[in-house]
Image 1 (cartoon, rainbow, N blue to C red):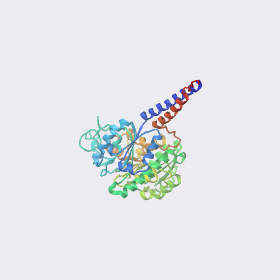
Image 2: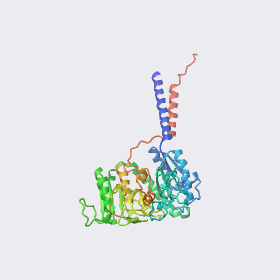
Image 3: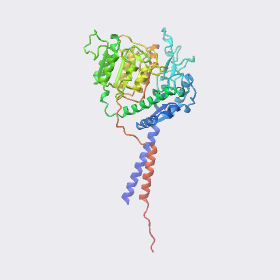
Image 4: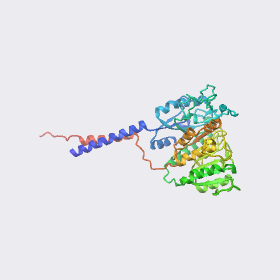
Length: 463
């Protein structure tokens, strides 16, 4: 009986330890926030499964919709301000590390649009004019006043006539942010229904990507550069980042007549040549430097070709082109790639800036051009093994603007479509931590057994 009592005591301590571990995990785990709409929440068949998947990865997952912040019926700046105001408290309350926005990014549609910012403010003495730039960057920084000068044009460069300075934009983030666009509402039911189907596919693909056991296929980077003046982008990435770290490359250039000691895999940059390399190598990362628009990157990729890519081997992209992520295009290239061919895309929601000829991409003068940012992003996801959201936010924080408003314009315009917590090196085999409620049930059952075994023997009165 003494042995049994000792065993029961040890069992009690063990179960209490489980409860403490589970409760502590729930209280102190990093938070993963999902903001969406009640309409999307009701229509999606995968959102709750995705929530459980993130919980299995150790996150305290919170899903919010417009009823949580009073965003119903709001559009444009009013919607963006209501959402950011809510996120300021939600971030602190739930220790949110990652934020996934699931909804329509257009400012004419609520309640979770991108924020319209005005980064290209000529505070630096340049002759640039301001143009509006849609961005989710605004939701990553919940502490600074992005309209410090009070002129109702948020996100302006500079501290003289802009919004930088004490109490203003500090370029330091609180959360890693990504978005899965879902276009349309009840007013455009066919677009909405298709977009929700695409959402569920993207969520399923993301779960599978993070649970994949064989990730060897991700060890190739495909680089495309249109025009001989841009192939320096691929060569510096290959020479500085890929080859020293054992990462394979596949290069598509316009290199006829250009002497290269290590010739590219294709010497003419065309969409068919890029597609052929993509199909042949199943790259983990794809990047390019070329002109662009809402539905295409010149001589590299377009939405028609994106629909034919092998979605069983989805890539991460850095798209150094203008307008590939323009939210007002409901079939913009970055979104179409996220639906088919990619697991996470980074493109620009507006025009973007240089360089158009060879420069040192590690020099402070050039690291915030779209090519320099691409170099830095690939270094962070492929070499430093950061998640895509962390890589993008830390890239923006650490890359000098060199007092150039057009570099700030690049930072604001670069936006992530996809789950910000995804990493090139994600693989299956993580052990799920039981939910505290499950541990309590286990404890209750075991406690019952303990009480039964520890009950003193019944005595019988003599006849």
